Image: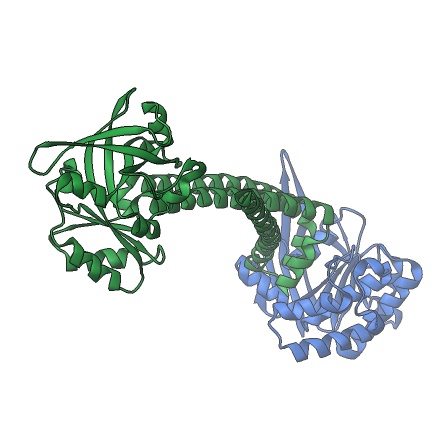
Length: 235
Length: 349
């Protein structure tokens, strides 16, 4: 089932005399359960593409469908509610709320959804345990390592029970061990709970784990490869 | 949760929050302290005027206050006093004979208002007797014939001292000129110079000798407290429609103006302080928002809508202001109590 569908997507930044085509006519679909990496050099348009898919930015032209909803036509307030209930975000610099504990950071999303206390509490504990941080729930982000913070961010992204998670360079600030740990968790969530992951990354370790690798350059799709198909010769 | 985040956000930068809270506390403390001081001054003035001069309510002949003519008396004064004394909430009632005339000493003369009173009853109604210093005689003590209590201001003007002889001259009800010799038995001093300049006090029993009769021009009523004045005035006006019943505000309009002016000044002062504080707090919140642009953007990205975000920032401002405001009220309360203690210490001295 197609979870993300992009149709002839353009994003043009008009910077004075020069117009920059950050996304230049991309059309693609992502199906449920995919573990996809978008790769490309700096300035190729990876983050812009992710922002357009996540509804954080609006395209100059083209359409973005998430679960069949054309989010480009949603009003600002509707878009925020849509993001809350359908998309999980993981950012490069974790972006946890520094004054809240790990538990509160995860629970916060469900509070925005007005979920009952008992459900919030149970799910928060489950999520923190699933990312291996059950014992760190009462610790604030500044007392956690980068890897641990990013795992809290993954738990937070999953809190609203989204259909897919957008992760913008999630391993960029992590060391090798933390990266492996995080990727293992994401891979397990993808495999066991059928959560769709879409990464933008430079990191070869992420690329190696991805089932599908989309390479973009100058805002265009250069290649779109299913690695497992490639590995198993089923292209 | 938003309240909890807002509260925790305040303590991210403890030094900055402490400065904002301190500034608010100082502003609120200064504002409430000065407002209390002004309110205290106004209340003190009102209480002084009520207890020394006008009492809560006065009753006159409707034409009396125009020219203070001796003929405009209260015909059934004795009965009125007896009836009013029985009313619940009335502390004291005194009758006064008021005549305008001249006071003459060997050195000078002045126009005055003679207040004929019964000293024992008047002591219960006004506190003027407390305004006579120990070295300045007594409030109608024993032994002197035709005693008179005058103010220090008038004594200076007439160049008289205790036991000095003065002459009072005024017109009787039939138009004839009456005069009598009196001896200064007490010299008072109040905070109201204008009152001091014109008011002298003699015994009603001494005026009967001069006038042959005792006209009653004024009934002064002191109530148990200041709150019931309007109710009393209304009921007395119904009961005595042919008399002029006035409360202290009508009798002393300057006091009403003083209170209104001090209230207006209080509001202006508080307005200026609050506006300055508001600018300070808005400036701080602006800094906080600009500092946290990235975080606020993230909150919107993960699903926090603008109204919740606005609510969170507003709650931070409100909590900061509340902390400062409460600290300010505690400080000003402490200062006011301290002032009361120091003031009562001075009074007892």
